[in-house]
Length: 250
Picture (tube, rainbow, N blue to C red):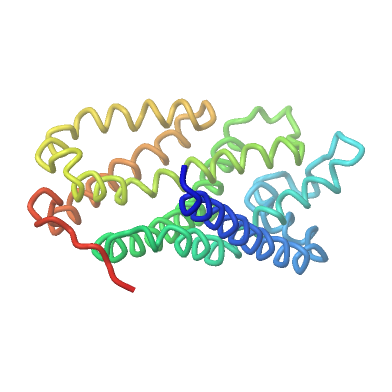
């Protein structure tokens, strides 16, 4: 390897380190600002469950340090979501110099759309799915039982559901990317509808709790979002139909 290549490689590593530090610093700064409100943030996260518990019933903490660490984990998650624009900007700024001009025009909207859709998936899960699922479970549970969920198990459940619905809402972006780069022709994706429906329910059965309600609430949006992706992909020109790209200048 020549000296020039070594210097270029080292400069890329230094830039990567600096951008990772900036992204981490943004998350840490938001986290520090939110820490005084860690308890209130967890209370807000727990509201869908609290509303379905019998009056006067509260969630429990079985570990000695659980009442401290669980709100801290929740606050760190919220801090990452708030700092996500900075994190994504640092990632974008690092890879942008190596992209073609037409790729820059495509990647940035996809990054923004992916972020918005992921947050929308979490919001849909929090405001609609949690209330529906918890109410269904509470009505189904025997009257001889007084539910008192553990806060650590509740956090694990919430994180799993947030990730599942956040990723599900990315389906339109995946469909558009597959169509745009000619990986899978749009006609083939249309023909695959029956398989997508079956796959959606299989995925929902794997990643959600073993109740029919939460599985339906994940599988149905996945199918609808797949259809939305197909509709938008109709207006996306496949890459194979384009001329050879030219590198951006400056």
